Image (cartoon, rainbow, N blue to C red; front, side, top):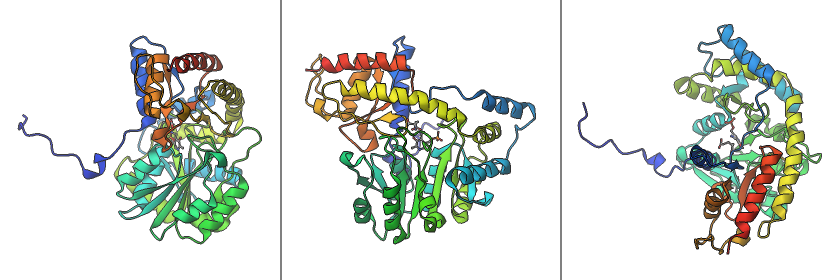
Amino acid sequence: MTSGRPPAGLARRVAQLQPSATHAITAKAKALEARGIRVIDFGVGEPDFDTPQTVKDAGIAAIQEGWTKYTPPAGLDELKQTVVEKLKRDQGLAYHPNQIVISCGAKHSLYNIAQALFDEGDEVLIPAPYWVSYPEQVRLQGATPVIVPTEESEGFCLSPAALTRALTPRTKAVILNSPNNPTGAVYPKSLLEELGRVLLDHHCVIISDEIYEYFLYDGAAHWSLPTLLPDLVGRTVIVNGVSKSYAMTGWRIGYAAGPAPIIQAMSSIQSQSTSNPTSISQKAAIAAIRSGTGFVTGMVTAFDQRRRAMADGLQRITGITCSLPKGGFYLFPRVSALFGRRTPSGQPIQTSTELAAYLLESAHVAVVPGGAFGAEGYLRFSYALPIEQIRTGLDQLRDAITALR
Ligand code: PMP
Ligand code: GLU
């Protein structure tokens, strides 16, 4: 029986909450496809490759063997141990399993870090362009995201001077993400060392999102800050997962490695919220991480070809300027030269959101507006789609942009 009364109002913390722009674009593209329109999807950031067969087999075996019950809320010991071995192998860092928590994706790890650490009044430094979820997760705790702009001329990397200027006694954490989403920037070793030296004098937590660690091109190398400055190990939380490296976005397994008190707090949050990540996915993630880097190396070879084709194609379109970043699977071209033009039907284009909407509706090409990443004047293209589709998408894009008046 209904009382006829309206539902109670939403909590204050969700009043300002923005839904994820990356997922929103995907939803719009899928809605068009449901109407029979073929969309070239440069929007979503997930590998188009299938999950490796050995990983699928491990998931199937887990079901057959009865791994279908609760596990400890922070994950299976076997998976934590596998993560410990991976961090030793790839980062040269020694962790104890009680410094690892397994979550429902890296996004969930990041959210639980925010829950475990941030109070009202805390400031969290986020270099822009940033991944869409960082500021929202900080705001959801009532804390303040402090956006620190970076320069395209400096490869979209945070400079030590900008970091120094942004740090205050209220700075609770800094979020670093290399290779970066959305720019593809890879922080060079020397720059990370300089940033680390600035942070040595400031007692805040460093959150290092390393989910694209293997997506590297042109001889670039990935460095984890605590590897370079061991004094920072005690206050760095590394976040990673299997979504990108093993084409497992739907399996939802990520993890965090860091100081035991933070990890214990995150584990308690999980025990009172999600409980464990899916048991079957955890078993599959063990097989994935143990398989090493052969699979992702194959993907990276294909992505490198796409990266070049895509950047070259974008660069040829008048009004678009595109550099060639060394990491991730995104390009982040500047499109502000197109602002002020009009669509063939007379609509003015003033923002990246309006441009992205025009491209989706007219060219059937999905891209994410730069504004969602704190960088108006840019668009994000994921090149995680087959090269033939990239070529078709570039043609459609060029025609739509040429049609602007
Ligand atoms: N960090 C960054 C920078 C990302 O691009 C993503 C993509 N989804 C994530 C974290 C989260 O990945 P997932 O939750 O699928 O592990
Ligand atoms: N990380 C991907 C992206 O940026 C997937 C979507 C998301 O989790 O926001 O597109």
